[in-house]
Image 1 (cartoon, rainbow, N blue to C red):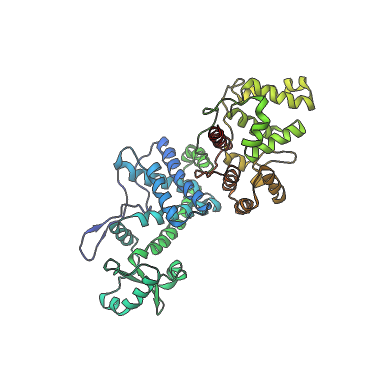
Image 2: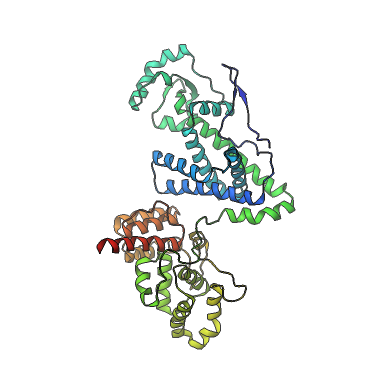
Length: 453
């Protein structure tokens, strides 16, 4: 297999300089099994979504750096160490194909890949950083010794103001047009003279990240053109289902059945709903109790959730019948609704064991008039959402944070903050599934009960 990466000669020691961090300029020349095509992409997606969650939750740069390190270690390794670089390359180019197809997808992928590259560069060795700079072939020359001595006092003052005294290891500087390093200029982290910024080697991350982002942005547009005009229909038909599913895929457990705790009973269901259900399911449950009916979308969303938290088929039939009978009668329930409940438990039709809906699926649904399913953080008006959160016990300080995330369309983060406000416990993994919310709530409640005994 040939991995296409640039090699450049160092002018000083005439040694080939090759970065161990791919810049993804050219797809690798190799055959990829379809199962690896998808699995590698999913692992990289876990990294990018982990970064996205961390940024949305307002983590500081040092926290993001630690997060990136852990995510890469957990998801981007390979049983065969020599294949780790291949996995990196393959997964990037697969996701490039997935996320090139719309402006919104491109924007998210570009932002997350750029952030990933930024922290990988910062975590890299000094030699690797120099190699990356050489591979980009940036048109910047190192400041000569004579020029360095002439501005050394000014550079020392800048370093001292940042609490980073200039040492002998920091004497490699590049002279760069100041408009090309806006981050450094805005942070007063460089000395500027006659339109040029003096950038230390350890600050070059700003330059290479800008170059990486620019290259990737152009490549995403080109990939989209190739996908729409050059890939054969046969290849499209083979890859389209995978490509389309990856951009909306849920990456956690399916919660098809309650595994950690005992089944919930009908006599406790109201109390459980009030204390352990996420807002989306609590709203559906309350509407069912109020109207004694839910449309198909609501029945599926709530019904599969209840199945996942441990409601048996017999109890599910009894629960739905007790409510629907008040509106449509027992006979009509048996005739028109009981079959679909048995079907969702895999006891009718093709006997498929249907899984509860993930947050991604709940958020992406489009409820119509008279529907109550979907994600309240996305579909409720601000006043209705505030009222619902207040009823759940979210205080005013947490409410402000939750509403801020909702306005920025970070619906899962908003749900996570709701969870933390209600339970007084952090959820670093973030809420990605309604049944995860229930399971984590149940764990906290059990711990509190055990500690009070």
